[in-house]
Amino acid sequence: MPNSERLAIANQKKDRGNYYYRREEFAFAIDSYSKALKILQLPTSSTQSSGEKSDVDCPTELINDAKLKLENNLAAAQLKVEAFDAAIMSCDTVLQSDPQNIKALFRKGKALLEMNEVDDAIPILQKVLTLAPGSQMASVELARARAIRQKEREHWSRSVNRRFPKTKQNKNTKLSTLSKVKLVMSSRLMVVTSVVAILSVLIGLFTYIYQPTIMNFNT
Image (tube, rainbow, N blue to C red; front, side):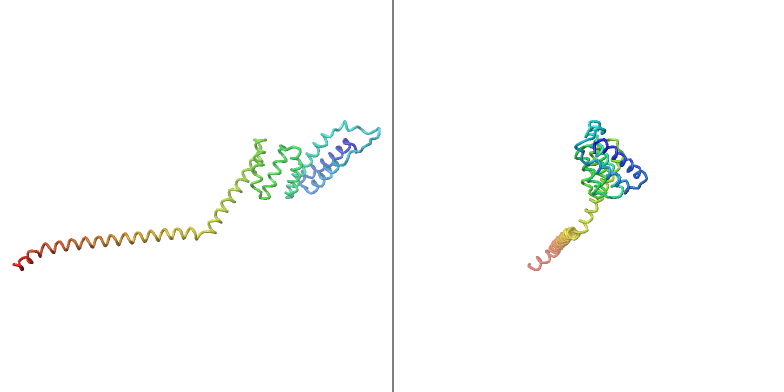
């Protein structure tokens, strides 16, 4: 089958898939896009009849471009039915030929995010915004990804604190006990010092008062 014929049939299937997609009949859309891709993957016939157009009228570049568009459409429909692994594969097929394809990058990032592969999704969505700074959808998905990552980090932090509460508590208890011991020792030392001081004063007083009497007894 010549390229021109394959492309014409594939375009019909693609249009049908778009029709189903707009009607939100995503399973039928996937079927139509998949059939269109199979048609484009058929080998070109080695011989052509005199009435057939030459592939010069439909170069391989047109076929490849049609394949990329179909893979992108297929990924969009696969996202709608939550076939995230399949959507990533469709996007990767596009990105192998066109690494900066914005639609494929965005849909892959979204699929990864839906699978909770946040750390993989964020750099892809950032790349989308680098290539298309005005993309509102990419901005929304990137903000959502960052919020999920922040929430996961907070959850992990709380889990660690719940898992090892005794270590911190024991440390605080030891510090508290040591402080109490120091306080008691300090208080006792102050009491002893006060008692010694009082005794010294009393002894001095006693000596001062009774010293003359003692001297008189000796005379």
